[in-house]
Amino acid sequence: MNIHLARSDQRRTIAAMLARAFFDDPAISWIFPDRLERSKRLPKLFMLLFDSDADKGMRLVTERGEAATFWRAPGQSQTGLLETLVHLLPMLNCFGTAIGRGMAVGDAIDAHMPAGDFWYLHIAGCDPIHQGKGIGAAVVRAGLERAVDGRFPAYLETPLEKNIGFYQSMGFAVTDEWTVPRGGPRFWSMWRPV
Image (cartoon, rainbow, N blue to C red; front, top):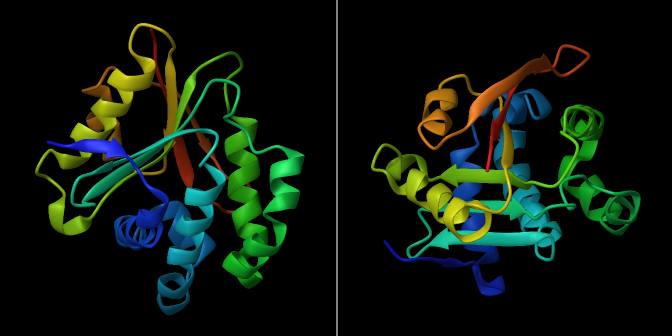
């Protein structure tokens, strides 16, 4: 399977695919409980994440855009103040009245981020019509092979309990289980050693 670095001209296509992939994700559903509002805002959210991760590590995509991963390089895992300020207006446009819930999820993720140098699997998604075919696993493995293997550990968090086995098959192990404050979703932190 051909997996390559995402190009800027693939931004909208990748964002639309990720919007479909994450539509029923527990964290996304908590941030945007109204399904119609969620369908309008998710492509904007993933275009914003595509842009913000552009110089933070690597963005991989399959040849036909069925799956993609965004990886943040060691030392780039957390969203700093400058990055937040640069993206403030697009964030407000993206989240609208859900900005408080979006920030609650982001703050909880940052609070559980481990210390040290590691690659952070920020986003991993596969179009629902292609799930179960090994395409999502291939794009995650490509990231592990390109950036991580033998040099750095890797970290991710997931709000989907069904994803735990998927990531365990690639060498990740659950290190923590936590809940976003104010009635937010539950997450599992996962670590893959060198």
